[in-house]
Length: 321
Ligand SMILES: Nc1ncnc2c1ncn2[C@@H]1O[C@H](COP(=O)(O)OP(=O)(O)OP(=O)(O)O)[C@@H](O)[C@H]1O
Ligand SMILES: [Mg+2]
Image (cartoon, rainbow, N blue to C red; front, side, top):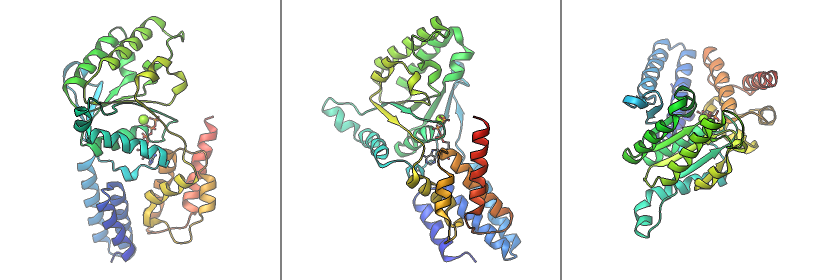
């Protein structure tokens, strides 16, 4: 039978609407049962989890016609509670949600909710995840524009495609994420492919300025320094993301590993070894450690597996530098 801690964690994750956590704990239950020799119940739990995960994976609905392959639509289920970030950033995200929910009240006073937002920061720190969180919190579909494709695939007609996308923004209410935005946002004075890129950027500036829809327009970049100054002015909010500090690393690991952590977890070492890694890399390391535990039939563990996984991440990171 499952332990009381596992049952509590399972119920909590359900009410937090945290599917990932729910799955992790369910897998842990399976591992627990299999350790006790209850192999058929362990397999049954794993099968249910696998099936459930497949069904709830984001549904990707491609846009029809010309924009196919350029705009991907999904309805993510990413709860805000799974996003680990500094309190100040969380407040900014709450403000976007709050203003959107109260948009009619604002409108009646001639004001508009903030809806043109730039997310800037290193890879793997939660920019795309934030767009997903907003999508889930506001009950709006998330349309992701593959900016790099937009630019490379249709070089000559990029501006025309952009116009089509902004028409869509007007007609189909939702959240529009220009991911990898640097592809069009690079400074206008920089001499790469000057003519075409400048036209594209100017077109974007014009479209975003003229847009008065209710849709949220989010651009994400890892390279804010590259972005043209004129762009910053067009965004009503610029949210900066950073690598996680000690407190954030700890809550991230607690969130992901849940009851896989045992009581005497060597936090000091883990916190030290995770320094400099992004949320995404730490997430991977935790899942690596959980996988080893599950495959060896363990339901909790000390920090050694995670430490090993973090070291691996740190090493591959320095090798690629
Ligand atoms: N702040 C965070 N809190 C919790 N998990 C995070 C956070 N940031 C990243 N992750 C984990 O890492 C994964 C990748 O993060 P995400 O795609 O949001 O990064 P990104 O900032 O968009 O990176 P890139 O610049 O490379 O696009 C997420 O799906 C999540 O599992
Ligand atoms: Mg991203």
